[in-house]
Image (tube, rainbow, N blue to C red; front, side, top):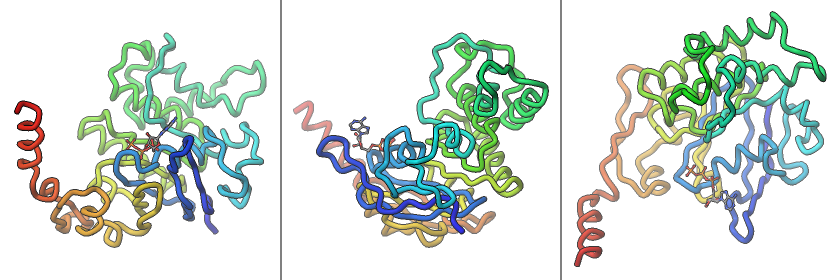
Length: 276
Ligand SMILES: Nc1ncnc2c1ncn2[C@@H]1O[C@H](COP(=O)(O)OP(=O)(O)OP(=O)(O)O)[C@@H](O)[C@H]1O
C-alpha cells in the first residue's frame, strides 16, 4: 500500500499553471527525490502536500485519508518539513528551536519533559548540531542553521519527511553526512522521504526513486537508471551531458558538457550584445 497518493493535482498562481495533472504514489520507507529545473513546480508540490497551500479535495491522500479533511494536529504528527528558507529571526537557543519539534505532542501549557529532551539530543547528535545547543540560532551560519532545522524536523517523529533543497547551504562533508542520516532513517526507521534536490548525482546516489518534474508535469518517475538519461537531461534542463556509471555505487553519474555544447558562444553573444 502506498503511503502518499497524489491524484491529478493541479495548481495555479493567478493565470499561471504551475502544476498540471500531477499524479504519483509514494511507498512507505523509501527515499524519493524531486528533480527539475527552476520554476518547474517542485516547491509548490511540497507546499500542497504540507497543506501550506490548499490542494483540491481528493487530490492528496496520506494512508488513504484525504489530507483536506485532516486537522493541523494530525498533519503535524504525520508530516515534518525542512523548508527552502530557514532564516529564523527570534533570539532562541539552538536547543529551544529543536525542542519546538515536540510541540505537536504537548498538551496546552505542558512543557517538554526528559523524554522530549532525549529525543532532541539524539537528533542533534545525528545532525552534528549538539555542539552549539546553547548558542543563539541567530548567530549560526546558513549551513549550521539548516542542520538545526533538519534536527527539529527529525524530533517531530513523523513517518513522512519533506525536504526542500536541504543540502543547498552545506559543504560536501555536511551534504554527505545529512544525506547519510536521512537515508539511515529511511532504512532503519521506515521514514518516508520526499526531497527536492538540485544535485542530480547526489539524488541518483541516495534516492530509491526519482521524480523528474518539468513545466508542472511529471516527465518520469522511477529508479535513477531509468530517469537519468542524456536525452531527458537535455530535454528538461536544456543542457548537454554525458552519463557514466559511478564505479562505486553503479548509479548513473552525469558530467555536464555545457548549454547545448555552446556555453562559451552563449556568454560571448550576451556580452557582445550588452557592450556593443
Ligand atoms: N506565491 C507565488 N505567487 C505567484 N507565483 C509563484 C508563487 N510561488 C511560486 N510562483 C511561481 O510558480 C512557479 C513554480 O515555482 P516553484 O517555487 O514551485 O518552483 P521550483 O521548481 O521549486 O523552483 P526552484 O528550483 O527555482 O526552487 C514559478 O514560475 C514561480 O515564479
